Length: 107
Image (tube, rainbow, N blue to C red):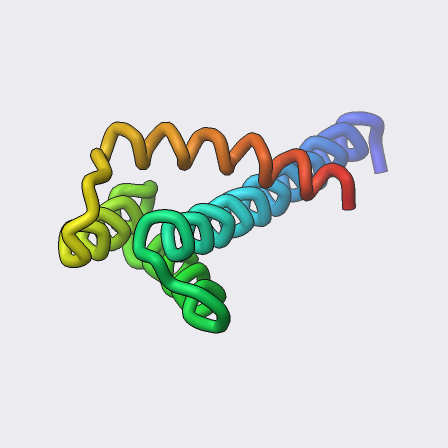
């Protein structure tokens, strides 16, 4: 194998690793967000918090991007009649992404 092939393979492996890490961070972010919304905004507790976190993770697989997940969570918040803006939710998404990255890196 030539030096070029080695470099190409190394770049491909790094790209795959980075994509895997990004995916893990996004899933963790969504779980953290869902559990936070469940307990702090929707007033759920116990197993309902865990189940809601999983439903938020699943909602993000419907379409590319986070708009499907945001739509699900905002719909649930509005159905509950809670006073919580989409802007504030998007800020929480960013906060939980930072936390998720830190948790993944610490593992």
